[in-house]
Image 1 (cartoon, helix red, strand yellow):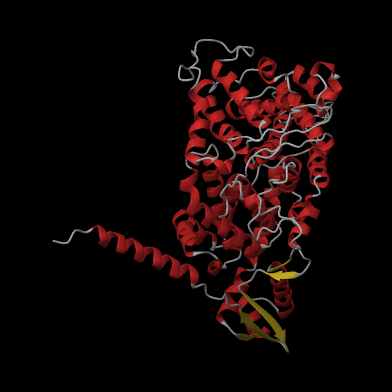
Image 2: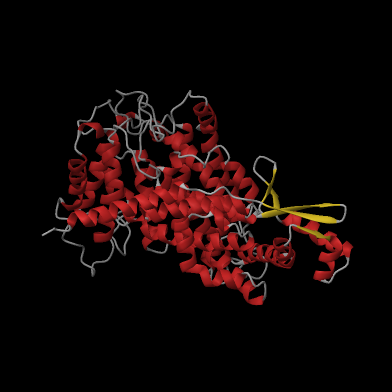
Length: 574
């Protein structure tokens, strides 16, 4: 099922050279390639060998042992070197499970225990520093990098990071990606964690650009620090890391071989059952989604879609195994197609993901990502409203989604069809609500007077979008007349529109241009619900017909019938 997580029996951690060499004899520089150097241990807690309920109970047990239920006194100030017993237990168990290649338990601890501990003990403070917990995990370099990654993610989610912390987080990502790219990493981590790394990496880059662009509130110390660390969160560095992960993983070649039946990357959700690693391959895979997102933030939609091209989004894939990845992929894919006037493709994908969320959101209510799922759901309904207003192909939308759409935006959609100043303002409102948080990647000029420029990229994209809407609105009258006639002469239509024939020909050519776009394969595709051609000064109108879909209708009736039968079975006959 799309979005349903499957975790294999635990596979391998970091398997590196010089197995018998004492840790203290290893040079500091060499620790990147000696981290988690362990004898292969087959865990008795393999996913296939235990009851899922027992596994869940065992994982949740870490949350309560060593007196977790006694919360930290709100009056005590934060001490980064104080490690409560539950945190000791958490890092020791997590380290052990990584060593024992127990992917299921890693996932339980990462998804459940970490967030429970955060809610109960670190709501308004960071976790203990990595220096404080390192002694409990043999000062392992790679584990410390993973712990820092979670530490900074918690900081961004619960608190407001300082400039120094933003720079330190960048350095940590650089160190971890360097290990993955140039070390001999043979570690298995859950797809959820690997996706969160890429997602957070892009988010922190976006956050840094927005922070840096607010120059008026910067102190002299902050400006000096920005000048000193001008390579931190540099756009080329971000793109280069994502590109390097994609290339080093050979993920494009793997997906090509999979089409020929020579690989089973998707069938195993990216995990390696032969004792290898999933880290580089899956990070490379999710980096394609990360590149799409970064290019959308920069306003380069064509390049973003090219980066995603190796992933066939018409099929289930590893990106659908994590709900956050699934939604992020389709949201940015649909938005990029909207901005490139590929409205039909955007409608198709928004319809599918909104229907999927509608059917499955109850299963994610306890997920840490649930609020984000709901937010993206509302944004995609707003984007679908824009698409259908510019390209009224309502028949492409499922009845369930259409019902939700009418409930949320039915009145606004009617007003957007009027093509007046009020409708123009509605396009502005919906776009501003649903668009990504665009960024300006360039650093400010420190010599010139300091000004805020964090809204510049958004204003530019809004201006381009509204310019396109204005052009579409001018063509509404043509569509109104063409919907009425199957054939009409140029002279007659020109008289109706109160223009001369040469102007009418120009309007018709503009209509043709605006209702067609170039697809990803380079072919011209039509977004219009009707087409026309001119033969000997006579316009012939051809209305496109969408084939009716009966499957969904019958499925809905079957579900209703089963509900009625269930109600009848519960009735006690006297």
